Length: 178
Length: 179
Image 1 (cartoon, each protein chain N blue to C red):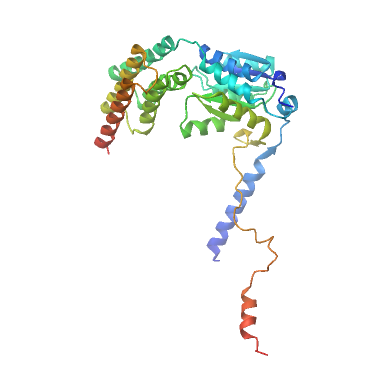
Image 2 (image 1 turned 30 degrees about the vertical axis):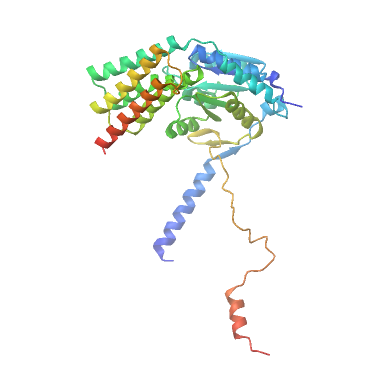
């Protein structure tokens, strides 16, 4: 080993040593375990909870409309005033994430699927240019159609056609921008 | 013998009332004794101080301070009555960078919405049965973020009774004079 390497090893050793010395490992009191004990829960209770989700009677339409309006406002702001990319991204992402997470919980899996596709699209594009804006607008219109026509799952002909059209639009975008 | 969930107090911090009701129903079905609500992070911390829950379920939220801020406050504020409380972050965000952000704020578990009752139960069970140590470092306080131990899966040669042949053994064999 030459002198240069020896010096390097020494530096790494001391950096690591300092790092470990600064971090303290703590075993916290496990209060929750002390309270609940052992043995898990009866699987019937998990089924009961699943049934609770299935039988929930929440009317999702007004909730979805609120987030759709937010999405529309974000799109309009983006088109009229222009936003720097970070703001635009977050403003579009928030209502889409809400629609994605709640659609599936309140019996609208198609809303979850379309929102999820839009989120994935936003996550991979490099800039919110006009073409990207068109893709997001297409997803927004699809979401609106799903709510207005009360299409819940993607097993319907209309649902399948919508998701296929959105997928094709994304493929065209990435072909044009690759 | 099964878990005595009726002894537990859970705080749900969720901005959407319908989603809060749904999660509350799921937890009630599991047999959780007391479920407390807060619809923003400010009230969330107040309720946390007042009720001192055994578990906190927090949404990413969207008000001026997020679920991440609440998690950091619970973990590091001098006013926090229990910095070690298990925290489940429940959110529609699922991208890797969001999971890392949540983990770095000090959450114990991460549940992606839409979720199933079974998924939520498994996370609660993991908190009970696989508690993590806490790390106290200059810029982080929370559960150990290293999820898996890097177990060696190869042959453990230290346990092997057969002594490996060394170069000197081979040299000795070669140079040994035939009898």
